[in-house]
Length: 133
Image (cartoon, rainbow, N blue to C red; front, side):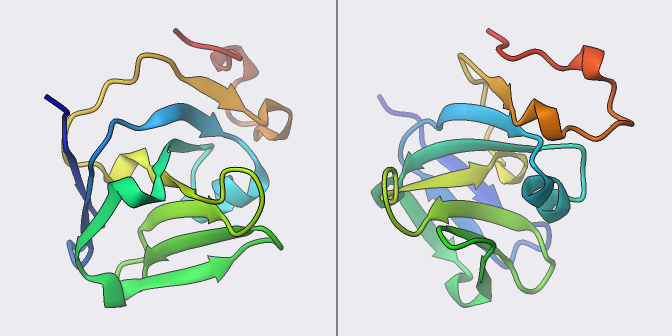
């Protein structure tokens, strides 16, 4: 039996479900992810876009093209970061889910920190490891 994961934004205007378990779980330290989350890094897991179902609030989702090929989606009511995806090229049919918005418990089998060369100085580099199993 496949686990279905539920998620929502801070104000609950947007709710969604994932029909598959997130893959490629990463904690991104790039400046765009840091700014989008307002934190030292952003945690995402990816799924095929066809496995994402918006249950409520699709009209509350605002998109922002943060670069030529990346689109970020957030709740325009509360500002919660929800998703990002590539608008073209490899993996453009996948979407990355902001794992902090999941309401269903999720424990990834593998996770990694990426773009650690961009990590902020106040987050101790000794806390970073390229791969956590």
